[in-house]
Image (cartoon, rainbow, N blue to C red; front, side):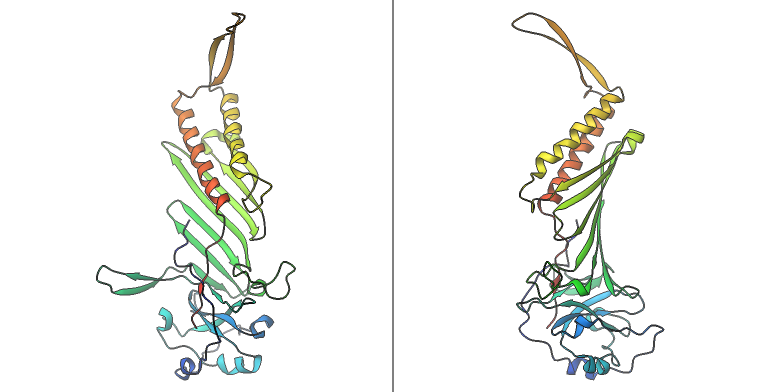
Length: 311
């Protein structure tokens, strides 16, 4: 799953003075719905996203420490065109509260690329966007046959388990964590969709769809992540193979194996899965891909890491 560009954390020693940044600003155009920062934005140091107000795309995150009165002055200025790669008259939107030890997380879709000559360029894939209707941020990633989405809720950042105070966890505020993975083997394929409510959720809901099995091809599971020490994901995942073998045999993909008891000489026959069948082989290959994907997901399940906010 794609996690580049959203990595790295550092301690923010002090709030940034933005006097120089905004001394170059000019009056903002008016918009139909004026942005009002949430109350937690004025609780102290926090991360403020630099966004294109037309698209909501986040180009970077800076550190700010303003009260409501100071914000009235800040909101009437804008960053200069091109700041952090933002092409439009950019605006600020509150994103994260500082943790108890002073760290500030920042989420954006800007990547820095360095060529073989050492020249650096920046690009933004639009993977992090501000949602004006909710005040939250949508984080989406796509890599090949895998995709993920999650929501960052500013008011839930740096909150403890009771939703109060300040947490030491930079990942707080991330909710509705979803992944989708398409797995292909020959002419057969499967889609695996997973859901986790937030980072404190020690279970992962999984829906597996194998269209080649028709109405029998949709399976639903709830797995424990390795953060839940009472469960062993690898053993749990074996149930997927067991269930699919049962489905295939129920569809008639069987063969008979004859055997003789060495002590009594009694002959017997047993129906087993016909693994020599090409369709069965493809389904079982897809099944292996499913278990490998979920094993990795359950063992190292975490959303994209936030990048440090610019001080």
